[in-house]
Image (tube, rainbow, N blue to C red; front, side, top):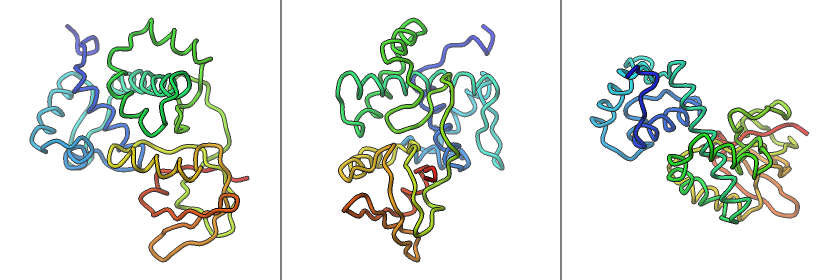
Length: 223
């Protein structure tokens, strides 16, 4: 069977998603970074990268890390679309907290086929983003220019647009943000920046402090 038509296992799809998350954060998808992201041993990462390279999904070199081929990017877009539609289903129709939706969608996405994907999109009225604000592949992009919250300066008035995905401490981070009302669409004022990059934000009558590891993952638009 040609490489382009080979079915991927759910494990291989998890690697594909992990590579996308790492690249989306502006990092290099090295075996070490993938091992941390997936909580697996580095030797097993190298074995999977070799198999995915044989299937034409990616190329790997020590200098560049894992880089998706055109075939790999098409597969990744389809997988991420199904993941983010699953998140919308879980939060919008079932009422699951957004902090849990990511983990559950990771399991659900692997059983969604083309037919179910179409039904989901229609039932959800064709959403353009997941609950965390990340774009759903295939949807028409919209919205203003974005930048990382980490780049904001004291006095800036901004609106939170999206929070990129990360497996490590994901539920805890999203729960913390949600408990403070900091969800996509929320407007805040940057009050101060500490020497280590921690930002203090004002939301209405309350304040929240966020470290650089979190603000690097958050994208905002100017008001």
